Length: 71
Image (cartoon, rainbow, N blue to C red):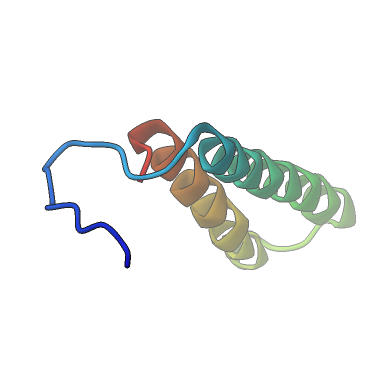
């Protein structure tokens, strides 16, 4: 039978391994965004096409925020 733990606001709910995973996901998203930005600028694409950078940058932001908040 699983132990029941009541919710405690502000208490971390993931361990160090999961924090590293989320930080790694943040770095991965950032790396993808930088690489994609270099490719888009090198190919001379229009500014509207660079809006696609929002996706990997959002992925990176979510990873970094979750790692720092340990949620």
